[in-house]
Image (cartoon, rainbow, N blue to C red; front, side, top):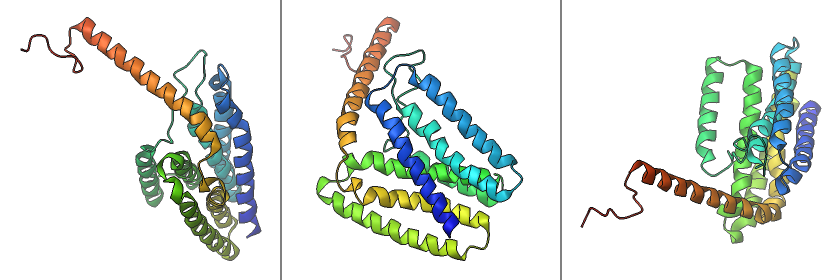
Length: 256
């Protein structure tokens, strides 16, 4: 039981530390940030995943896989989302997999992962790493969208219900960890407990009202997205004119 709780707490400590690391870059993006942040985090992720697949002791493999899944979120979910103001490669930024439509891809990911695990087509440690990543992705999907989707009046009620569900799930997981007879099972339960504790941490306070950070910094990001769409629309209209293609937004002069 102690191992599972320790693993869950270590994951949440890293979660808090990652917020402290990445929030300043979201508030004030740095030129070429993605070019040095991505290789560093990707190297850490690949190193952890490699150790998870090659280490002889199975329990250590699952522990490496656990942290590989957590770091994978930074590589795939966090760094590509932070838009850089200027740099060598501007395309590798502002890639948001936490938008509302991301639920479809997360659901597909869970289904595929389930099939691969059930059929034994994926190494168990790798499946555990991807399971942790999928859990964080599902968690982040709600965290990134609730401020705009959940009505303000019912936010405290929704957050309280989620907190109690996560609390009950955490108690069940602790009981399961106490009864677990292998270190591997305790490690896996600790990884799931990390997700439920993260939900308790957020739903007990921040999810009861819109987060100030999202209100302050997501608004300008949406304005930038709208401006990019307008510029792309203008360019498409320009191409239509150059190529002699009739635009749907302008009337056809040959039709009376």
